[in-house]
Length: 164
Image (cartoon, rainbow, N blue to C red):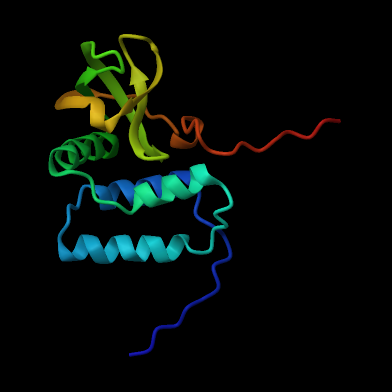
């Protein structure tokens, strides 16, 4: 069997990389997950890593999440796919624990951390929740409004509008 490799004409978008990485992240450390991570790493090889932030971020993308975080990531991914709100029990940077109802939009990685990006109903605003600070995720049956992920990725490079 011969594999034909076509030239990659369009690089993956930030949203596509985040979706692939999230899918891989909650697979765990089994043989398929290792092979899939290697494939993602191979896909990302064409990128020029002259930026330390990008290099650290891509390194995080191909590392498996700890088992407890991966379990929460599965619930988050299911909620994004099903467009259902989730209830997070979250510990912020100061150690304060709160319960948040969140309309999940997407997940992303920045440097060495995974984030859930969503609309926090308590704050009535977009918020990013670090995976390692999410203590628990409760699925709900409450529908979430549809949101386009590319509007909520704070770390991606934005196209600049041309001045007239």
